[in-house]
Amino acid sequence: SYELTQPHSVSVSPGQTARITCSGDILENKYTSWYQQKPGQSPVLILYQNNRRPSGIPERFSGSNSGNTATLTISGTQAMDEGDYYCQAWDTSTYVFGTGTTVTAL
Amino acid sequence: EVQLVESGGGLVQPGGSLRLSCTASGFSLVRYSMIWVRQAPTKGLEWVSYISYSGYTTYYADSVKGRFTISRDSVNNSLFLQMNSLRVEDTAVYFCVREGAGWRAGMDVWGQGTTVTVSS
Image (cartoon, rainbow over all chains, first blue to last red; front, side, top):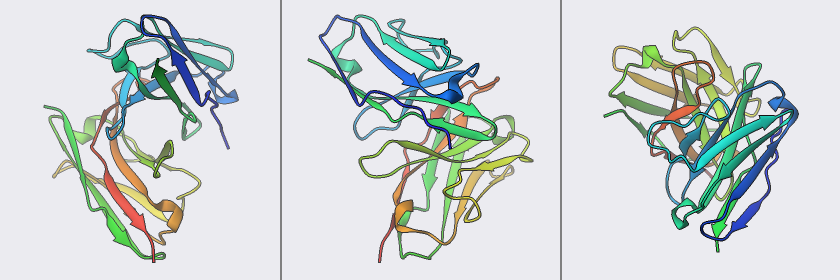
């Protein structure tokens, strides 16, 4: 089965840059999406096709892919960016989510 | 307003069945592929099932294959998940999700979720 591995948690000072990695063989030459989930809420799509932002998503969210690793970057992290983040990819009739990363703004 | 509203969750004994429903508004199901995603208590997201916009193609996670069936009613703009032979490990919040238009455009609309509890 496919796996996407993310760090369990990332801490960042407000105003600084947070980077969340997502690693897995499934990412080779595949699009990655990213989702933000706050406690008690449904996930929200924040990036798709590696680095495209849906309408309404702030520019401070960006993404990149290299080989079998995708990276979500939050530039100028704000307190409101705290929450859980999941990467997601697709391959051969299977959708896979990453293990999830909790972002804390200290 | 584009919206997805799930219903049908509840408490069921192991081995039992449930049918989840998802009513879409603000868009037509026949123009989008649809997905079910679940989240067990304090756990991450897990993809469950997919149905193409045409309705002809369906996929299932290995964990539910042979037990769950995804379907839709284009007249009533509704998506369903028939869940049979339920197990304790199927306990989760189940989200109805729209896949965005375009190739691998992400899951762009999520419902609020419906809770399924499998317990004796």
